[in-house]
Length: 72
Image 1 (tube, one colour):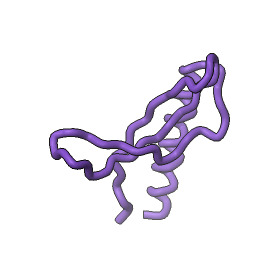
Image 2: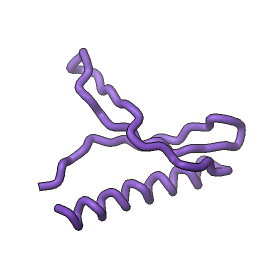
Image 3: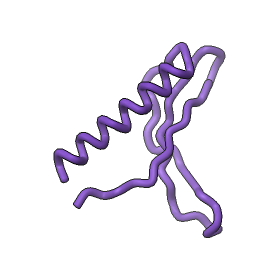
């Protein structure tokens, strides 16, 4: 059975006009009522718009899901 991950996708503008998608993975924190995430995967290259970075981040999530489906 494949390992299920609790992931979140965000986009960061690290410099003006340089947007990177970032996949975050949940981990056990000190407080049970708070969600804690750490960076798991980051875009290898910046995009010129938020929407482009977001679309590529979604594509990465889909690629990961397809890979896990094929191996699971």
